Length: 214
Image (cartoon, rainbow, N blue to C red):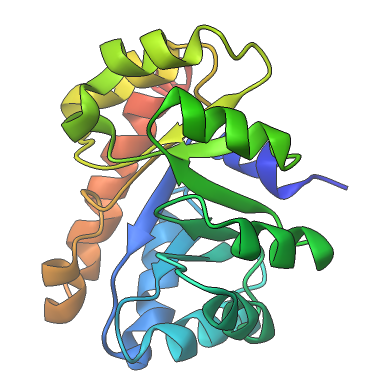
């Protein structure tokens, strides 16, 4: 059976979704699937996030759906109950990590320094969210801090857009990149799912250049 991490590594992009209206979850999921990116990290920043995640998990089992911006164990538990298949947090919260590991729920905490990377590896993790990627110094900074940690893998997120994608993905320890540029909150609010589909298709072409002619 393919693991969550293997699926993320195959897709190479994790779209961060900020959604207010759960009714938009279905057309959003359909747009992502149509574009070849059956994955969504639902940010737990809005009142409708949990229900949106629940609907995608129930109605689109082919979509790898997880919860992002998870700050505590209560949110992690709510996300798990709603059907989240992975958890992403902005920072390294050992209690959230322990909860997820105790429930066989993949978790990718945010790290930004060698100390945080080392602490995350000490907790038994391998794949980590590098955040905020561009604000911390981008790929050059990531290469510097990742150098001592041969076993660590990263999902850079924060300020990443199409211009950065190829370079990040070419760095061996990077599994995938996260971001919202292909499915912005404004487009979701406006119901502009055709634009989301087209932008996501473009992102996938950049992430998988060898498929461009197929």
